[in-house]
Image 1 (cartoon, rainbow over the protein chains, first blue to last red):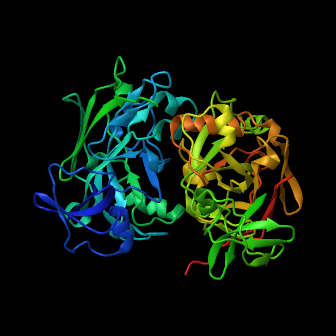
Image 2 (image 1 turned 120 degrees about the horizontal axis):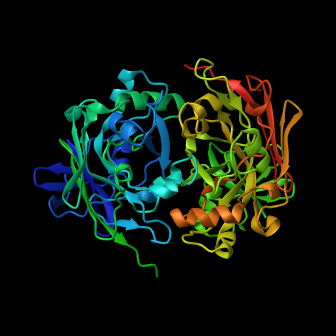
Amino acid sequence: MRFATVRHDGTTRAARVEDDHYVVLDHADVGELLRSGDGGHVHGPAVDRATADLAPLITHPGKIVCVGVNYRDHIEEMGRDVPPAPTYFAKFRQALIGAHDDIALPDPATSTSIDWEAELAVIIGTELRHASSADALAAIAGYTVLNDVSVRDYQRRTTQFLAGKTFESMTPLGPELVTRDELGDGSGLAIRCEIDGVVKQESNTSELVFNAVDIVADLSTIITLEPGDVIATGTPGGVGAARTPPEWMMDGTVVRTMIDGIGECQNVCRNQVRG
Amino acid sequence: MRFATVRHDGTTRAARVEDDHYVVLDHADVGELLRSGDGGHVHGPAVDRATADLAPLITHPGKIVCVGVNYRDHIEEMGRDVPPAPTYFAKFRQALIGAHDDIALPDPATSTSIDWEAELAVIIGTELRHASSADALAAIAGYTVLNDVSVRDYQRRTTQFLAGKTFESMTPLGPELVTRDELGDGSGLAIRCEIDGVVKQESNTSELVFNAVDIVADLSTIITLEPGDVIATGTPGGVGAARTPPEWMMDGTVVRTMIDGIGECQNVCRNQVRG
């Protein structure tokens, strides 16, 4: 099954995919749908799938955990070592945007080193703590696409990545949740990022150092995972910062972030006009 | 004024301090009180202040931002350099406990390197983005005490601190919010951590490299701050990891985290029995 979060009648609503349309549900987003424990099988208004206005798939996640340095080719291009455990950092909710929303560039005086990072995102479906691998897999509701758009100079101004990773309205999340019964542990999926029509990242989720199950089980040793939690699993090689010369996104840049079997986010970078 | 969040009739409630008692309010916690924009002046049931059961001061913060390496003596003892900007990492909500709750030690097979970090915490009172220093100060609701209890081997297993900083039920937050009109920019406050009655950390918030206003203004460049957001400003020298030999907390260790003009958290470390 597939679910999305659509903007509908001035608010957001979870929606179930039925062929070419969405069936709008009562829940405010896919996170609330997952927390409710109901299957989203009821009837509701229909919205055309091709033209729907998509909100971030999870509008108010309890947590957003990102994994860094988790594809071997990306580790090599960034000059890092393969870490002994998953490298975690966070984002906050206000970073998220929908699958077709504009990416809000920071003021150029703040930063112009804006980079792309195509990622497979795991969405948690049931509460989990101290989990085995089997329990970890069972707690995964499904998968979606995330672009961990990064403000590289802020990421690198101290030892900790958070500042460069949680800029407001820069992280596309969507378009849809594809449930685990269709994608298993999320391995074997082609992942790609195109910038203005040119392929910049092209890999496969089987190249992850720590896969979705490894990450979920390890995180559950640290803290309780809850329905609607978002875990971004890391990005493959081909980011702009690792190119010679480095390549950055700017006003008008079109970013397509694609995972086979899930779908894509397509977002345009836009300078902001501050009132 | 002072506010707390108390456990009351099987739920949590914000409460106003009146001398030796709390006046219980309708809001679920101090975060909800701040988001409501009401002053918390109404009447309500009275609870004895000395024996009240304190919940985390903010039970569901939209974000918890921590600042690392922000006191000169701690930077020196950890062998780090003074960073050019605040070093940010996150915690998640489930890390928080009340001012007198037990600290839930991880399974000893997971880690035994449990350390203390007394910190001044800033609580945001109004929404804020792209703020000047004056606006940043005005957006601070007040201050409280936080102990950024750290699982050092998890903090150090990769480059990113998050894993060692967000373990479940290890971060005391409280006892009370002291509003900004009493404490200004939060400087000039003596801060101390005692372990089993022995002073381990003793400094003053005037020793912060980046003070509360610097941090709030800088963060607002990155993302919108909201009422109830928690910002932990960093810890002074004297942590267990920097001692020879290193000192760790264990089952039964009593931690007192004190800031003059605010109050203290007193917490006991306890091994967990997993069912």
